[in-house]
Image 1 (spheres, rainbow, N blue to C red):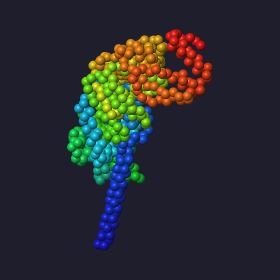
Image 2: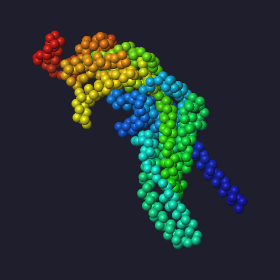
Image 3: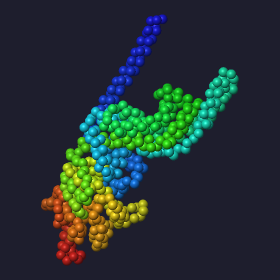
Image 4: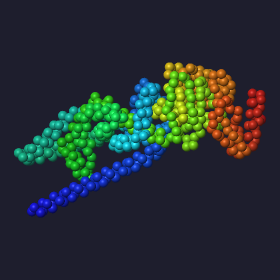
Length: 560
């Protein structure tokens, strides 16, 4: 008998040791995989596809927190293709980081101290791999909520009506009473259990779907609380202020987290016996509904604590992503911000172009850029705006030097007519320009970028109105960059605007663009030459050249 007991104990110990060994081995493998992944993708462009719905979802957190601060409007965001800039930066691990990073890009900072703190954190993660990876492992437990934003999950809980648990408590008490009565009145007990079980099953089935729709919301908050708890174990004073914020919020939500397994455990008999038993317990005694309603009430008055969790986890995750972006860049600089309404940038390049041409410029008033088709005017203007935004958001300009005041940035570039509202291109364009004119009258310095002013109307009215709009925009608190094909504007506005241009080199059978910005107005045109290179009929080419020559000489169009 004693030998049998020893054998049984030995088998149990062996089984336990085997499970422990497998668990430890799997844990080590997961850690190694995560470490390899973190190192492999550090300083690289994230390889991820986004749907339109995903971008809309990610943006909701920022739009909810818009407030009274300056917020990049949708026209500017679209003009500058900022979705692609976000994709270039988005090496985040969690939804908190992803959504906070998006918010950073849409809300330029106007205080040096905020940028200094952001840079301190970014640089700390950039040069300290061990602490960075430890934090990323914690953030990975929060994960990403693909398809719907974390903010939407969290704020959705505010819309759920708070219900009393009296009905469920009475039903649970009745079921317990029926079980007890089995010892005294078995038949009555069995009948009571059967009746209650049928009713409970109907109630369980009808309400389970409604409740499960919100369980993922609960899980998101629980994951953030778990991450906050794990970060408290990382003793590092460089992130101390954020950990303290998380700790305070987590403790305030302790009541919400306590006993949460009653509603968040999942499983079936075939996969998880414990979860299945819990499912039956919920069916008999409504423990999940009682706990669900209790957790909802625990959230009342703690919305701010949930927001603190989202924000502080987002700050850490987004800072790591920005640090990775800096490692990816060939060079970058921090912005230098002054009171003077001027801009000085050196070796500025576009982050979305694989082999960009860097340009430098120093301006103190309006800037008018002319040049041939496809010579680089629009790209240069976008580059100015993008870097102004990056300098005031992620504290990282893609240049060797960026010096300017704190600026609001607005653009009017990649416009289209609106089929939904039935508005023509010209109507859309003048509305876009009107919003910039209105903003220019406010106190804060403004950077406005305009590509082809009033291209949607005839030449005479375009030049007349464009010159007046650009002249009015050239205020003491505004930096204007405008591109145009209308050389007349470069003469009309030469006392108010400094002229720059891009040009091309034309050979016998090709046009080469060097994309280098040069002072002065352009003295070349290539539209007709491009028709010729693409094989247009010779009669069209010669006729076009003749008409252009007549107009240049007389100022009158004549049909040739």
